[in-house]
Image (cartoon, rainbow, N blue to C red):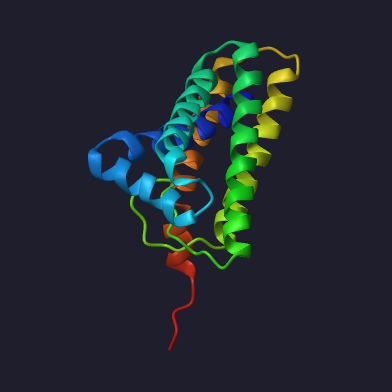
Amino acid sequence: MDVACRLLLAAVFVTAAWTKVSGKAGWAAFVGSLRQLDQVPGPLLRPAAFAVVATEIVVAVLLLVPVRVAGWIGFALAGCLLLSFTLVIGRALSRGNRAPCRCFGASSTPLGPIHIVRNLILVCVAVLGLAGASAPGAFEVPYALLAGVAGLVAGILITAFEDLVALFKPTAR
């Protein structure tokens, strides 16, 4: 379970960080989305954006390091970061702010309860990973590989969560 949770969250955080820093347009869109959320004072927008991306990268690296202590720290930091994101989204929604989420690059999907659900699912993965990283047990390569592939696929699906939900959402007639 530890391996699946590590790779799921690592895939999510690598994708999130990459889409924000892979080009000027991605970075500008992310900083703009923070501005639209209206929860960070203007002079702190860029430092806050940098802190978010730096933390996402640190989380991914910690989760990819195959050392138990790195896993504990990575899972705990991931859970805290995801809870922070959830609180920011909840606060924005309570104020009627539905700015598009730029979690995984350019998106026109306005903030909504689905973003809170996605983040809470990821918090649960972080908690499960922390529990799995704390549990003693033998490391068996075939099971770890299978769990790793499952985690990686789940991580990729989570990054496309908004699109998958929109795909199954009933259309207005």
